[in-house]
Length: 118
Image 1 (cartoon, helix red, strand yellow):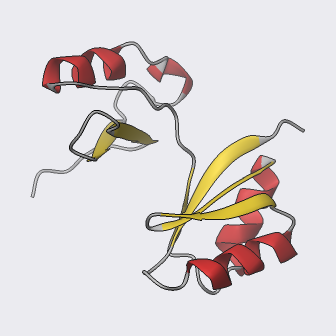
Image 2 (cartoon, rainbow, N blue to C red):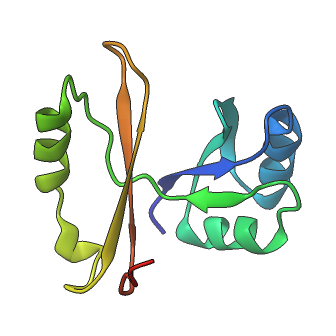
C-alpha cells in the first residue's frame, strides 16, 4: 500500500490531542500544523481517521502544493494538475488559498458530483 500525505483538520488548541489520536490509529509521524495535523499513511488510515476520530473535523488529501505569486500563477498551477484522475467531467472543484507572502501555498481539493446553484 502506498503512503500518502493527509491533513486532519481540527479546532485550534485540539491539535496535540488529534496527533495522539492519529498515532493510535497508525499514522506515521503526525505533526501539528496550522488548523490541524499532517500525517502519512495508506488510504485505509484516512478512512479509519474519518470513522474513528473524535477530534478531527475532516481528513483532507492534498493534491498539490505550489508557489503562486499572483492569481495567474495560481490558475496556471491548478490547470496543470491531472484532473481526469480525480474528477468526473461533471465534477466540482474547490481551491483554498492560505498565506499572503512569498511562502504562500495553495491546497486544492476535488469533489465528485454536480454543483447546484444556490
